[in-house]
Image (cartoon, rainbow, N blue to C red; front, side, top):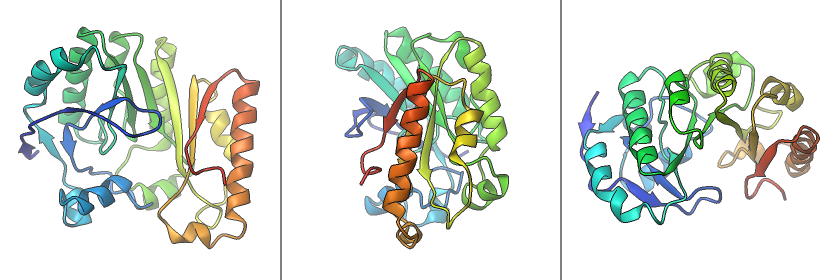
Length: 252
């Protein structure tokens, strides 16, 4: 795996449910076609010129060294660190990335900093040995493997993601699911309730609509469609005692 060096690792985010984040990988091999927001930002700021370039991830080999310098300066300002906002900390098929992510979480936890992780890969069971304050999540926008292979071609299967999350839940870890970017029926006909039931064990659900794709606006009454789904998610979470968060812009 190609290596790069970074000058900084921890930075404050402007994301609505984030605090600080760390992106110790440049690029992502998952090849999502929604499109990928992170890739669009990378192209905008010159980090990657093409989608093909973005899909060849590069690991920041000096991440732990930089954290040793940054943590003492920032630990009193940080509520939590999100892994990651512009890549995947447990990138499917990249054990080197996963090992680095675990070491990063250990280092942050050692300084009393809580971590939150989100993946389309497999959550390692080793995470259960770390701080009980950490929160581990998967992205899940469907249960249809045909849809996954078309839109998220290099990711872990939906059932494998769910199984890895369930294993951490059973080990008494805090777990969550991001149902985002959720597609309109002109992408795939599906029942959101089936997804909710498949993740009924998790502690928190985040829901958000698919953006940056003109096919969404081609679906008649797409705004009403997403508004209805939001009501469904909220009703499900409130009835089952779960935390929830609706992403900005989903309700219109």
